[in-house]
Image (cartoon, rainbow, N blue to C red; front, side):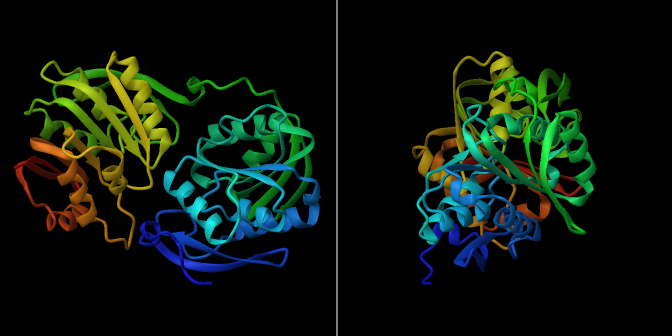
Length: 401
């Protein structure tokens, strides 16, 4: 098959791999920025094998592939059963971008691909099939919620089919037992276990409070603030060196107007900067691949009293910001670096910064010293205002000429 994968995403691709399901031949593009970047992982293969063997897929009218990654499970189902309506969900905007493009590349009609948390936005009793290769890093709270409530979104006769890594097997078994789920089928290998199940507890309804892990007071530089933090993001109860370096280097300068924070994390830096008397933001933009970072940062900004306009962007990468915002629109661009391995990223990032930051205004870069060294070669049109290193991290405050 001729490679017509989207050029912008193709630049982030690590490998193309062939795959078959029920005799249907497909090719998937994988990325070093996403799970299983060298091959279709064995857990996904096991889950699809059990579905082919144990589920009457011809009768499935609609399905959800939640935590879809590059889309292998849902695309395989849709390729064999084109009448099946498949919803793809992932909290990573790079994953959903790859899923949509892998659909197109494999000539599979896209029903709906959305940036969402696990099972978010589903109606009770609406699905014939829910499938997921649940990430090992999901955490106990997320896993418990999934196993307790996934069954409530099924139609009568529907099933949930999930694969998990072996160390989480006992946790899954306990959660299924506690939720009064019925295990329809189970299969294990040395590395993975698949569960097909139904039943469980009634979903209590959408409420962001159920994601909150910690509420407390934090201190950065010379001031303190209160915040709530969530599971599955760092800095939930203690501050990282990246946040501390950011605050120490940024506290000497005043900021006003429009600010954008790429990878805002739990929201520590936006909240801390906004509550400082010397700063006066009129609008704040939050942007990340990770929608959870955007959600909790928005949550904390609102709770801290920021009543001005806040916009959120779920994007596959920082370079996409050039398309989302107007030229010379930002008074402050704060970038928490998280580059994808083996991808040429520094030039695109600095071109984006040069385009969006107003003359005389600021760009702050925080990340590993090794990443900053790569980036430094492409810093043009900016002067250095602050620059410091600590424990393998480096912060740079730039002012546009």
